Length: 390
Image (cartoon, rainbow, N blue to C red; front, side):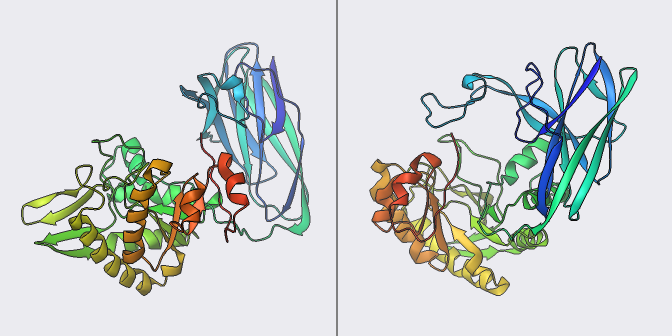
């Protein structure tokens, strides 16, 4: 027996759960894209195919991914799925072609994600047809689109984009033509989901990296070191900016100039030298070393000329260090002063949860985690930002 159930996009459909509540109507504003889910169950293993009519919708099979660390111990104000226990959680959306076999397992739920384009105002009927298991069944979604239009997006939205991870996952050389093609598709996807500000790796991001270890070199700025002098090549950065702009992403946050959680060391910087290409800064370089400070000052002048030429200076942000703690205040203060001198033309944005950093004027735009928003809400912060994590 094959059972179909339409439900809304906010349901988390676990394969071992009961059928979710039925939702067969979807209400949208003009210009708004909508989503729904088709949930299937069967009393025996079977392969089916799913097709859609009535709208140029895209279908995705919802796959469960193992999460060994779903939530931090003692986390507050969290809505926990499965009590936050490790296990398989619905997460990955795999594109599903019209006649592509979709395997169903006996007595387990399978979800198909339905992504609708922006539809004209009025009533629409979207029909999902499931063929297989010796049956053909349909489910009908009624979509009502208002004459009221969705207003232009105003909030700035970034969801950190890790170019090195894409190269690693797809096993292609960083910034090869294959990598640029992958970046193109993922940037388009990010833009389609509202991203307006993109993490831009001037140098390999100093994020989520164990001390002494390295992420794959992902550096948009070419560096040539001759003695104590530096020359910079921004051709790769220009291609990145042009690609982002082609998808409507017009704001850029340059990756952090100091390591995470304290700003104690430098990010990895690779340069052409008299001895060939090599790493000139990294974990073994103190953040405030004269050589690195001189490097940043030289970079700041060249980068400003580049962004002015492209007309994007006002759309660029810089980072010092991600989530410094109270014990790092003095170190952060010194590093922030260096960045202000070298990159004063750009706005300073950092994730931090300690209000003292902002009260001391060390960061222009503080971005507290959700759990720290209230502490910043009482302050006279011109722009209210937050991020969700943990």
